[in-house]
Length: 370
Image (cartoon, rainbow, N blue to C red):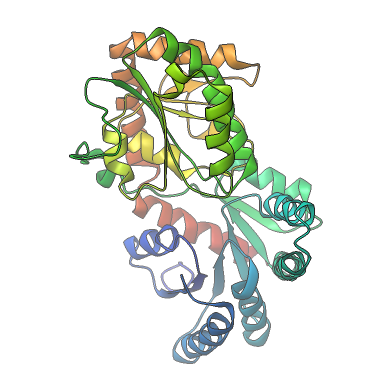
């Protein structure tokens, strides 16, 4: 190890900035190879060739694999075995739960060919997790699920939170033009990934909770940004279950390219999910200086200090969410205090250099335990 820090070879094919940026901020030795947008066959070949090249050029103390799924998982397993180095998985979500939900969806739609392909993908992921020396999860909640919810409870584990580029969100301007006119309104916003049923279900419950608030306050608007498999279902729910006079102030934007500007136009960030690890969207809202209302499960409770950086709402029905929304809309000074505290917290705790240092330290501990 160089200066007590491990030299890592990293592999990622999604959200590469979560691995690349914090490790670059530490100036630590090592290489991160990113394959975003690459097909599976080309990804396999390129990852093997480039990975072997790194091993030939320098000493590698550990392979650090982001997410641990699919083709890059197989490549990491092969290289770890060939060069006899530890394999550490950076776990950013409840992969087994996500895969189980996806397989159920494909089977229910009679997508037999796609089910077979995805089952192979899932089996590759299981192989990777089985071979891995240890895991670095993005939250304590996820670490506990990995330790007690998989068949590999004796692997070394550690928790290191995700980074956020606080300046990108803190300095954003309100959008000049938008499909939705937000001027003069108090804006509630949710940013989510509608590829997951558990996130869609949470958003539906937020809609139920804030519908009366919208009906009683014609200057309040609710905006949902997010695309995915369940967007159509969410649109249908609003069209069929929400009164027209309220539905006209619920805006489902789909994919939004400029999230920082959308957050800059909002007053309160509202979030609810039944599947997560440590949602980045909450960090981004906090970095933008927004107070956050959210349920305390799935790592979210580790992101919010209730009453100091946001409000945690128990899953006991719509009334609690509605009361929390009404409380923040009615108290501008409380909104500002919570948002200010949240921005300061993520600027310190989720800074790239700090996350990079903690990530390297976690890998070092796992390698040493091996």
